[in-house]
Length: 367
Image (cartoon, rainbow, N blue to C red; front, side, top):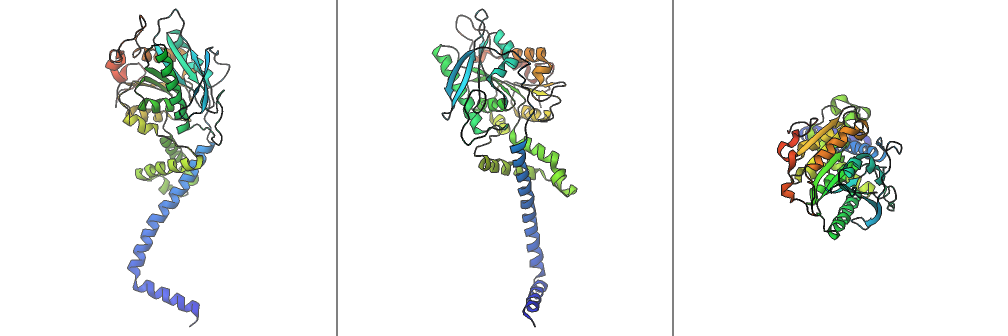
């Protein structure tokens, strides 16, 4: 018998005598190998989505008039030099407090004019700044900002809050602040609020959690890259949780930064007043993203879905209502200051604290 024939005979003999063991082993290998290959493909595509997907911008230099303020420079939490601006409320208006504004991806500090002008006119000082690699703030070598919130933007807004806190202390003013963020800036605001007790209230316009957004895209586009329909339509929920976990860790290695989860931060956040805003027709980040975060947040909280508005366009489509809601929300937690003093934070409960998620006509009930 020739050697190839002898080998084939030996294999057949082994299989015939150990068919049960071979069947079990093959099944186990298939059950392990196939999911690994599927997950590997999904992760690779998810990373490409994170690298190439560009959000639509609300920023248009023609749709708002810039606001002048005092230009300042300050260090990010990791020492990166950043540029900012302090816009003071009119001297003849009773002061209410300080709001830190965090702009959207590919925007700059001047975009605060679109969202915060009514607040300034009502007595709020506003501190606005450029994230690294945006506006007048220098870029970090070997780091390319993306629309997804990372530890770099976290460090930037931490530095902004620290600078504002010192600024307020030097003037013997109340050091509690409000945060007002747009899209990625809203994510940064929520993450900082979860760790900093000086944050009294948050306005989050177009907020999202990177992990659940990427999962949304993968579910939405699975039919393009998954060949077997019955497979991609019936992935177990555990599969998507594992995919999120793998995707975030692989992205951290690939892009050289961490991607914190806004979803997890809100779940562990101490009760903090939050006003969520989302455009009804946002095709980039569906309304469900803000609804999920709203469901995780503790009371008091409010969600306004702006009719007909696209991504970050609520202030453009409904400027008067946007101003009224944001101002009413913040006024509930920043009472008027008289004789250089402010009310104790415990007294700043306001209307929202008693009415919770039903404070505004466009809000949804608590879940």
